Image: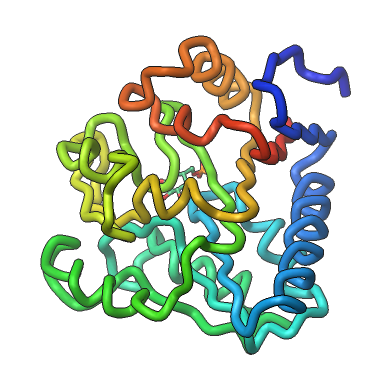
Length: 239
Ligand SMILES: O=C1O[C@H](COP(=O)(O)O)[C@@H](O)[C@H](O)[C@H]1O
């Protein structure tokens, strides 16, 4: 594969692979190495993953890694406000493909709580996450072609709250006009301060989206992914 022609800010570490499986294996190796190192230093560690279609091979590879999973708290960067039985549920994806094999022992913290809307369930979600230590250890982000990451959508009326660098909330309710479901998301400061942050995405269309994001890095409200394009971000991409 020809290495994509894309100019990253200094300190961003891109890894380009030929196939989604190759990149998923590399990412699983990098994440498990980092978690193992953190488990030698901390009693519990946190692993934040994204939903959508991209992470499946990464989840499968990571679930087979040898780790003390009983000390790992797994949560999603964002969730659609749907029941776990719904095919759009990111929770369902994580339970079916990540919390398997060796990772069965991990502790899952659910963003989706009871309530008709994410606003109704927000306090319960905050209570669920109350024991997490900040900064988070590992955050794996995805990205949409509108420049959203997690559920930080450019067209959500709650975006300025969730993207506020001073926001004290770990989670926020989101109602993006473009999306069929309401969402709940980790906020920018909670995600941005993680010790290990990776952006995992695939496809030439999304590479073009990333180039657009890098072209005008300051307008983070137009493309929230821009807030994460900073030194030490690890980028994992395949066609
Ligand atoms: O809606 C979402 O989309 C993004 C990207 O998903 P993909 O299907 O293009 O991989 C994802 O990162 C986010 O968690 C999800 O809720």
